[in-house]
Length: 389
Image (cartoon, rainbow, N blue to C red; front, side):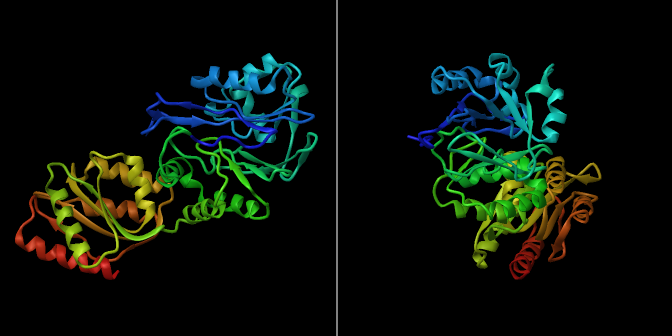
């Protein structure tokens, strides 16, 4: 059973959406999605964020049960994205005395989503480092702009040393999913937050000054143990360092001939002593996973068919997604296939040149339609160069 217990006075109000199969209308979900919300009960009762519309009823039942006839005094708005903020209007109507805690950008953006006629009377404006005492607990506010929206802020509860981290440290999957945190957290991070590495680094510096015993994200499990692991992982991701010394082969093949060449290359690399080699089919496997895996490894091989005097569409999409997420600091190689006018290498290079610290460590190789004996020799030399590079 998944542990959602936090403390006697801090309660978990989250809910799982087991039916959702596409997050933000683009990310394939393997095990649904969790949406987290929290309640601190003290002299003043504080709700930290609401929840997605699809699980509103479950959330409301939990909230009313935990309040047990009491009323909330404050709602802290960490993030205005609708999967967390959808029920702000409902709460304001249900509890007319409740006030909203947010920062300047929170209140600038709030009217984009809700028409709150008396917002000026109900808002409590906070800035970096401000604190609010609610009895035995004290809330400290930490601005986290562009992690991953401009208004995002985190809340640190000083007594129990809990960081309510907004979308940071979240993952895809329901909170009850029996799966390792890392793969789906990586896919979530690079899909949604990956562009904003410098901003994540800035927040991690702030977090390093805090004594954190528990991390409560807006998606995924509550993190209570080995917090150094999660903080170190985020530091690696946000500084664009590879997690592993290994080789990722991203292949976009039309009829399978380019993929066949990559299978041969993978076998050569492994026989030559490469520590870890992963071959990924961009035409059939999840693109968000491909992006995450590219950031995971120290070297990447782009292998693609030529197409319409350019590069085959799945590879073009993959490169664009990497560029959007500031892909950098990697060693790469290129393989192209073309029957009469190979064009993939030129187009791949044009995108890579727009990225930072990309080192093409060996000459690109060209295959004409199918792998021939001379191509085997070229692949062997290519494999050797990749390992040495």
